[in-house]
Length: 73
Image 1 (tube, rainbow, N blue to C red):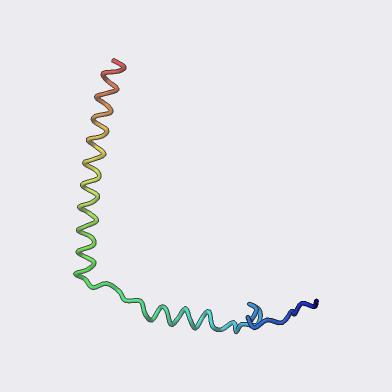
Image 2: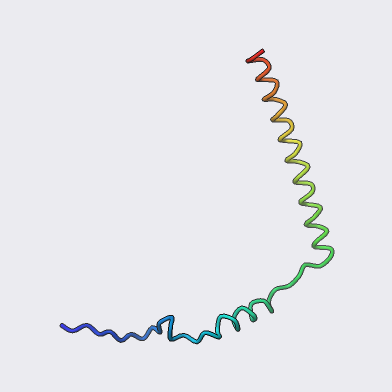
């Protein structure tokens, strides 16, 4: 039995090198920047989440401080 070394799949070294740059530029042309309203909305949502999580962490910290005060002292 003889094995065939030729295949129909091109190796990485035989692929044209300019495709990566061209493909990258084509993909960057598809990118769209958000509008001012979208940016403001995302900022407000982010701020609300930050405030909510800060309050949650402060409450958890207060509970643990109270528990440790009861256990230790």
